Length: 300
Length: 116
Image (tube, rainbow over all chains, first blue to last red; front, side, top):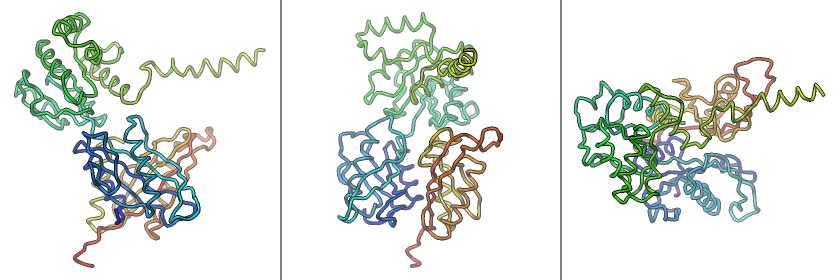
């Protein structure tokens, strides 16, 4: 961690990390009262995905690599702590953090760090390449997911039908994920041509370790109920069953395949960002709160 | 910023440096109120190729481009405060009602060790 790393090299390292299933963080000095020469210095950490227990030693041992420097060992230690906290908190946002640091062992001074995180790329794995999969792959790609579509019928999972999918996989539904690595940023949507296949994939998905971020399964209320009864009969514990999103998507009255894809996409955004799923009009009640109030005052 | 945006921007940065072009990278590091783009949005100001990405467009972006030109010249990073809180009644498309801080830094061409 002696040599400097510039914005281009940092972007390259962090992108490569995210694409290979690792988490990367960077701390950049954007203001430093007593030591303006530190502004623009940057420290990048890359953390192996599968070992959250590692403590992020600066220097690169034990599952964390580092690049760059902040020009001061204490500031680097502070920055590393902030990056570790941000990596550990899935809701952490990129942004400024202010630290008090003693640069070069001198007086304490205020340093502003811009902390950014790149998490492993989000994947959308659409199981079944039928009429819902097509708009779903499209919207998924639009939302920034890396989309994989798999089917056991070679003439369905084709490039013509899925122009913006990252991968098209021909897979046997008895072992659908053999060639598709699933991690905790994978989102699975089960939309095969038959509920029997959906069920087989569902059982496998529920037993995965690490568990995928999302498991959605298409089906009417009746179908979903039958699936749950079957899962309970097979001894699948309730806490796993509760993880299944079925019937799938938000309640927006979706009927066509395109509308269903929008409802599922809305559910994915909701899980990622948080929110109520209700119209903002009803959540914020802008007119009612402000105009109504003012009108009452005028009338009084 | 989506992963695809990130990739496009990173590739443009790498392309500029391997072509030996000096450019500037602008990153929104904080926002207050309503701004067209959020923290993390980035834009490359490449004097030969123009802009890649956006930090929001309009007047605010013009201030950032001016700063980028200075930064490319001097190499000293700048922090630009862009104020979009002008009167709503102007109906300017740049009026969003927020304030954002944009960090602008220079990206130099890769130093080829065989030529040093």
